[in-house]
Amino acid sequence: MDDLIIAGEKFSSRLIMGTGGAPSLEVLDQALAASGTELTTVAMRRLDPGSRGSVLDVLRRRDIKVLPNTAGCFTAGEAVLTARLAREALGTNWVKLEVIADERTLLPDPIETFDAAERLVADGFVVLPYIGDDPALARRLEQAGCAAVMPLGAPIGSGLGIRNPHSIELIVEAASVPVILDAGIGTASDAALAMELGCDAVLLATAVTRAQRPDLMAAAMKGAVAAGRLARQAGRIPRRRYAEASSPTSP
Amino acid sequence: MIVTINGAAHEVADGTTVAQAVQTLTSATTGVAVAVNDEVVTRSAWETTALGDSDRVEVLTAVQGG
Image (cartoon, rainbow over all chains, first blue to last red; front, top):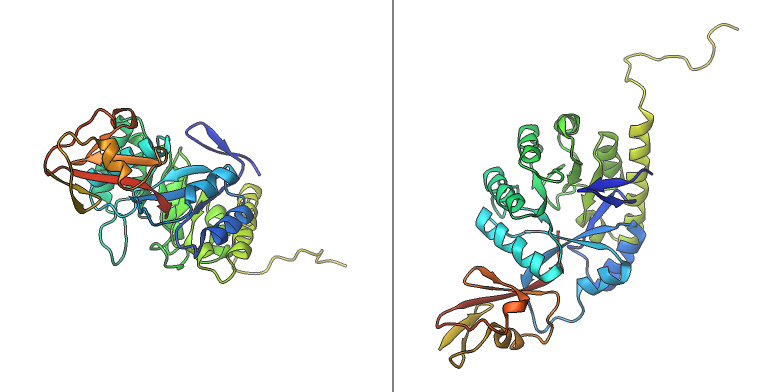
């Protein structure tokens, strides 16, 4: 598979894993290994002196690049502070910008997200914003200097797949930064579809970490992303209303 | 004076530094970031930044998520 390039950095895997939802660090470690991911999200939270083991140790051992997110932020101000804390703690200027509108849907707030994106780009961050499947917002964020755009397929953790493939195609058509399908993936065919629609990568967590066999599902997602990418590059046949014989029609 | 560290009130001596506040939670100095009153205090300034009365100290690290 050809390399994924984000902000000049190359990745040979087009599957980006989140670390949320795994029942233990051991299960997470096995799933990350099976997924082949080279870029993985973490969240920033208050340090708990009682917690044992760190997700950072797992990522370090696997040599996986860490992508901090701003999950849990409701305003641009909170997101900017969280990104700056992540940069300080983790030594990376990359951030998955996530500013949610409400707890029930966890849908991204477009206005706060755009505001935060502008401030973070100005502060030297490599910004990967999580957004709705909105082609106009995706274009504006690219113009604002974001390194990628990450439209959702469906709400976070819903496993509903890609609810609006047409919008994802419109985003892909117009974008000159990578488009990463983020959120909503339920199973391997969803990940393959994202790549067939022309997305450059897929970001998922719950579909793997809360599967009955996370390591198996991680391997399935790895295969699906690779297959979808190849199918996109191969160029699918047009859909037709009636049959077209593939064998000669005359004897 | 009273400062708040990760949401809990602490009675600390005048002149207590950010580094000392962090040490109440962890001996780690990497993978950790600190904000005082919503402003980041860089690692290099922990030892020299003294806290004031009613300061809010947040000590964060990376956890599973996203």
